[in-house]
Image 1 (spheres, rainbow, N blue to C red):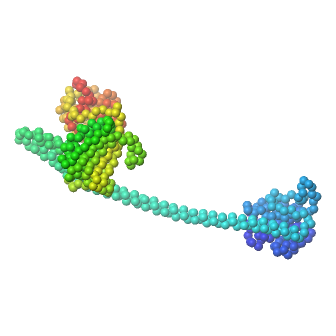
Image 2: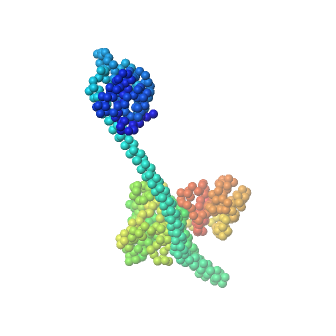
Image 3: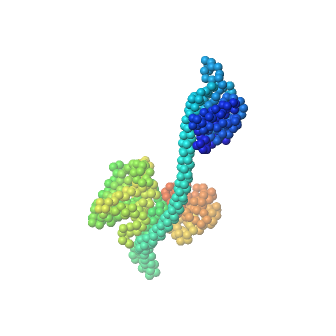
Length: 569
């Protein structure tokens, strides 16, 4: 039980326990005359009960300790942490010694009685009242400590309550914030979907014109060829065949631009001599831009090599050159510069630190405002009139650079021109090899057997006819289920040409089965796209290669010749 101090009237009262004679009455009378409230207790049990109510001090005689001390000890031990009630103990006269000059009681006090003043009888009135006054003053200081602790406890409770209230408010605010974030995400998703639909609309409006022109060239040329053949007029037929081929190639290039932005076109990345590539492009750039534009090629001060697809890099530079030409209708300076740079962390957003090859295309044209610069890499965004551009030029450059492991940065100021910087991973000179710029001559076969696995009938028939034209024997399979028995048979097969996407399994899975039956069989995959060069390298195994649709006759012939060689049938 913890001692509770209730009423202020009891806080300063003096509890007296003097069970023998008239000591209690005399002390009561003396304290009353001195202005103190006092109460006489019959024994230690009553004293303990009163002490649990409240007391300013306890005045007890030595003989009162002879009985009931345990109950008194319990009351003392039950005091609060701040409480140490003063005890005035009246003892009988004792003989003093030099080793212990202070008089000691004949009966031991409880261990919990730690604040004790011993008064040896007889005690005069003045010393007794003085001792009581001193005890009450000490007790008041304890009450001050109590009040301070209680005030702090109340403040802590109030603070705890305020914290709980604030926590509830924050939890409610957090819940509302979660709901708002969820609603915002939903709205943003709806906006993204709307933007996708808008992009589709821009696609149909922006590139349909170009595609229709290309298809018109293909279809029109084929119709004329057909009519001439039917009429037996074969003169100038090569001209229409060339026109159809050029239109189809333009359509293929536009498709590559779309795939470049989505980062899904196949890249043949290898170390390139950038100075040599820029040198080979100079004449083409000069012919592409206006005569009013001065072209300046600034090669690096030393041979530098970048890991990239040569054809795609050339296309990117030409695209930038055309954009620069359009930005300088009255003429100006077009500069193509190459150098090796060391990018620091944070120098370009999202760029990893390291050594890169920088190819920068600059013009002195009209420049662009910041809001236009922020959109230039968006698909289908263009500042040109409808029909004069698809808005895929810069987005293709962006997609090519990112797929190559590099970055693109653009710096433009209205009236001061534009600089587009392409950063490509640098390669060591020892790793580099010279890029072959000459067209490969068509190499024909000698009756070697080629298994063609393609589910698209028209593509399969086309490959069959091309193989026949090249001197190969084509064996057809429309799906893996038809191809597997052929692979397991004793038929001679020198090469398997397979589409990457087949019904039931992928071309790579079919290749694994083929290698179980024919471990040394060369395999050529045909694909419309590849995720990127890194995945392509993991996709291909030993003696495997890949060719992207659409492909030219000489390109397919060279691939097949390289893979199976010139073995006799």
